[in-house]
Image (tube, rainbow, N blue to C red; front, side):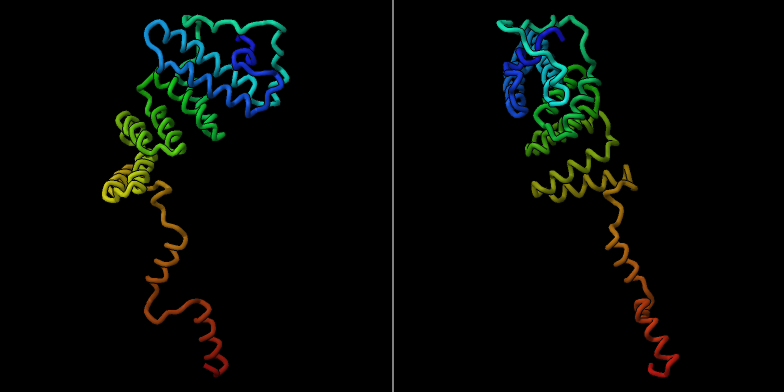
Length: 230
């Protein structure tokens, strides 16, 4: 990347991690390609890519030492032309997933949305977008993303279960149950449908023959018979 990351993010090399993150989120929102159209959109996409690369370069304190400080009086160069080879949609998705795994939700959402703009036919992209939105507390938008994912992959049991959970929280119990039944037909061995240990023990207890107590009770009865104290 030819532009200095600090210049692109408009921060000092001595900025804290929180200051860098705040600057990134502000500029990413400002240059988000969805806010532009026509020729301006291509420039915004180039700027947006450059911002993401800059943030990746300096967000980790261990890596910041490898980034040179900007030269005195230097100005941030313009991002590379949109015709320059860039990351694939899969690359952006992997970056988004890594950010999501670190609970960096704002960045994860921005990156996966860029992946979707490049390739909107990948169910996993929409599913990740839904997970980020859901974790950010926007269940309704998350549902739309999940619906898009299911439209592309109707056998995605994990996403169907997440939808069911949102419906349950919204008080739509019948719909939630219907979604869970659909997921169970698709993946009967899914961890969601495996009985808990408590449920297994309860079932075993219910199936015990009448008059048959616990092992401890049986041992006491046997001891009583042997000692004549029963």
